[in-house]
Amino acid sequence: MGGSYENGPYIPAEHERYGLLPHCRAKGGEVFSFPSMLDDVDERIRTWEAENVGTQASNGESERGGDSTRIVPYGMKSHAEYYGVLERYSVEIAPDDPQLARDIRTLEKIMKLMNVKEEWSIVRYVGDQCDEVRGLSLTKGRCYYWPCSESCPKYEGVIDDEEFTSYLYPCDPNSWEIISDPTGMAARALAGEADTVSAWFIEERRADPDSLQGWALANGVVVKQTVAPGYENEEAGLWKQSERDVVALSCPNCGKRFEFAAWTLVNVDESREASELLRADRLSEFTCPDCGYTASLVHPCLCLMPSHRAVIYQVDHEEMRAGCIAMFDSLKRDAFPCERYRIARDRHELREKFLLFETGLDDRALECLKIGVTGQAKVDGIVPVDVECRVVLRGIGDDGDLHLAIEVGEDTYLSDMPVDALRLFSEPLAASSIADEQPYIVDRTWADHAYDVLDREGLLG
Image (cartoon, rainbow, N blue to C red; front, side, top):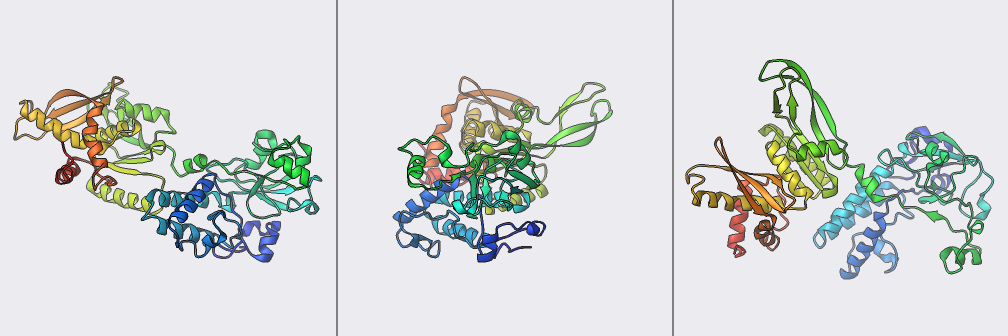
């Protein structure tokens, strides 16, 4: 294997015979593909440094100067060196700006996905348009990396003779010869699917005299077109796709044996079918093919909500709950791009939290509101004072009402409340010392704790 994670450039053993990255191999150094979010994060880091003079997060990186970049991976010797820079920034920034620290960790996670060279295509340049005389561009007969990832197998450019990052070049099939193409990206790009430039040199295009291209043309400078792959596409690769497991069932009514494809993992952004079933409370519903009996299967299910940065796991026993907590802890340590992790004890809680999160509502406020609903039901005589009841969110109407059900034994009483009722608790929670508290389990026990805090801090009206 050429190089390593600690000493660049890292080149997989199966790629060594292609003579890739000759300058990095001779002088040391690493190349990187990076997402568009890096520019935004870099700018926010520079702003933070300006407001916190004297920081040492990057072990000298800040000495580049006030207008220089902080985390653009130019001149890095290895993956280990670069990810170490990100880690130091994340640790030092966290006390002042937790969100920026999380975004740095997310950036690191995405870049690790993007920079798996085993997934990159290798293409030989066989054209006559470029040569080293024109500057750091391409050399005829040399092999080059075309970066991509399994999660986002799209053309993003060529790691050319500069050996820094990807730059856009025309995907002229007469100028490139595919050597290795594990994701099929290069073949698709050369077939015309690449979103890239059409001209090999800036002189070949009509440049606006007031543009960067116009200035370069007037001064004889070769300008390479850079591309930063979409952050959203790469982040989507961190979230798994929906999955179903086939389970054998016996009909509770007639005893007929049959198979049912149970949803074990639901990515609501990816599967419209699953999200619609969940919304209709039919995700785990099965029907006997013999007698037509319909019921819901008690079965664990992991619900992913990428657009809402939420994960909900329905578990069916205490041992599984312990494993779920360990999994959530691991995801948080790895800076998985999620803000709310929740454990649900049954399908009703799973659906309830899904409905709240997809409409931008706070499940913590609802649990607090349920205490008030229960208390009022006992005052009104609907629920005996010494009897426990359960309040369940049945739905959120187009009219903006929360459709609640009060379950007392075998009896169910319906109650509608305007969604604005949640503000009775969401606003005090936001102003409280537990504003950022996002526990894995948000239920009556947590709501009692929240009530005590809000009361103690004088935030309950």
